[in-house]
Image 1: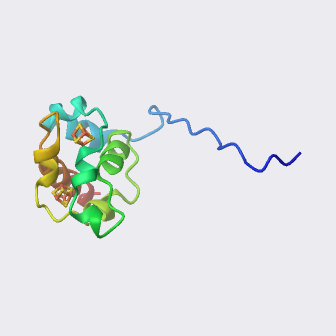
Image 2: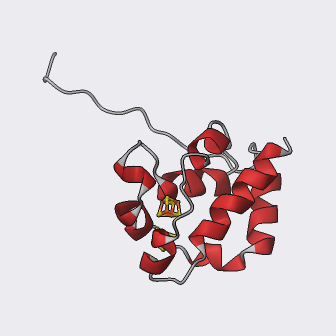
Length: 108
Ligand code: SF4
Ligand code: SF4
């Protein structure tokens, strides 16, 4: 029967299967990143997000899960203006997170 809508497939993240090498390095260097509450203030204020599809909250969450595909290219859209850092209620140095992720992923 066609109800006019479909149900999304479930998407489970199996952290045991993901390579968490970069994520662990990132959290060792920036432990405060674990305090992220996913509020999205960084993304809402992002300068690059106004011109591109860049979504800092999404990309850093994927990287922390060990899902690095496309993360380097996405992080390269960041203009390093630092607005997100001013907006973060947890005081996370988001600009530094961008640079760390790019540096680590560039080695791969
Ligand atoms: S530093 Fe990058 S992520 Fe942060 S607001 Fe500026 S462009 Fe967006
Ligand atoms: S503003 Fe800070 S706490 Fe909110 S999603 Fe961004 S990094 Fe996380």
